[in-house]
Length: 70
Image (cartoon, rainbow, N blue to C red; front, side, top):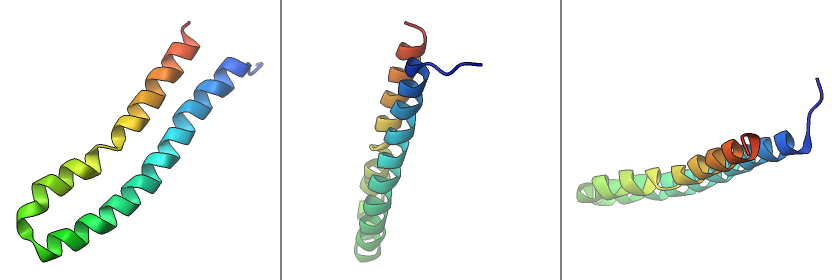
């Protein structure tokens, strides 16, 4: 089985975006916990802010699908 450059590009699109999302969520999660400890009212906003970086992985997945099924 031969691996093409398109498949490598698709794997990199998903992999790099997943790593970037993990790093972003780690920093946002730490700040969110500290903010929630100070003010309980910001819980909903912090959950939303933690979920926003997930769009990077979704976009990376869409790019991978577009590369594979071009």
